[in-house]
Image (cartoon, rainbow, N blue to C red):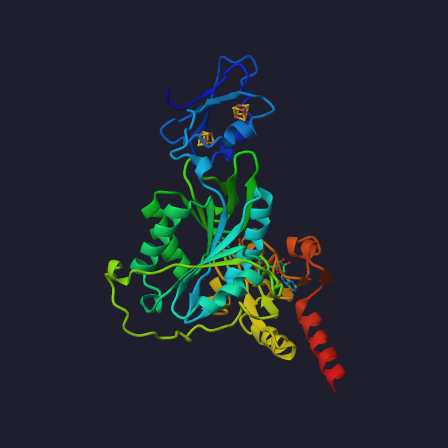
Length: 409
Ligand code: FAD
Ligand code: SF4
Ligand code: SF4
């Protein structure tokens, strides 16, 4: 049987809620001159319909949409796959901080599923880093330590991780949505024939099915979609930096370190590493800043960023911005915070003249303290802020600067 979807004409009252709910533009309304109340009727174009079910949900009061979906059978024996894994990305022996964030969330998922949390460490001269991963929550660390892995190369790293995943069969593997993680995860997923959800901003598990609920922005950030990989294992996800808090180290925590032998003769790299260049051109240091002062369209003019910079300098912080300010050409893109900019998690985020649209909030919502300065007390940023300062930023920011200077004098 193929998937089926039908509008029940006797139940449809023509409210058109389903039209706005359908992300694929598959529903239109038609006239029904013969209807006693002249109600319109929803019509579904099955060629555009993906059977996502959003319209069924939108019409749950009237129950006018009936959908039958084929039963989806697993492609593999799901019960063979157990355990949560984190890929411990490192470069030149320095473990990326996103790994500690993944260990934190990985621990939560592993505890819910009642399975061990493991990390995979691939590199050269890196075995000593395994204890650090155990201190941060891993129960087991698989290590591949060989000069062939001194620099990240897609072929060699993919070959070794693929082999390990096929042998050990974890049910979940998480990677950072870094340049390396994005390239690496997609190759591994293709090799082991499983699904991959990129750029997740939330992760949870359904304890009945053991499916990983992978949440990420979709349709240009207008909705948050929760994606499942119900038929394949392992379930693979890359996660943005700073979405989760780092796992705190517990010194002396016990775990198992499994150092695997590498047969370098079997690993073929189709690319050759020549030289490493560090790109400092767009360095704004938003990622690591404890304090960020951000400006938005409310600044009204590019010169407004001088005030933002002055406050950031006084506080020893970095300058951020909304996309509206970047699009207006007031500040370079490297300062943009949000869905299509940088994700940050500072101790203090000061949002000046930023309304707080979802695409901005995604990038800074996990800040410990949010201070909003805005004329509109009802805007979303003022609602979520720890401290809301209502008024003109051109009066409030100079007053704050003057008080800080006075206090320091
Ligand atoms: P506005 O929404 O116009 O808000 C300006 C605020 O300033 C208002 O709240 C106003 O009350 C206040 N204000 C005005 N004058 C003053 C004053 N003198 N004193 C104090 N307050 C004042 N946005 C991002 O920021 N980051 C992203 O990564 C991002 N990605 C996006 C991706 C997609 C696919 C899409 C569709 C949009 C994206 N956006 C992003 C845009 C986002 O939807 C908003 O348009 C944007 O965040 C609005 O910026 P803003 O808050 O500066 O401007
Ligand atoms: Fe409204 Fe349901 Fe009819 Fe759509 S199908 S127009 S949601 S009653
Ligand atoms: Fe649109 Fe999804 Fe309903 Fe199909 S099932 S008509 S794609 S909302």
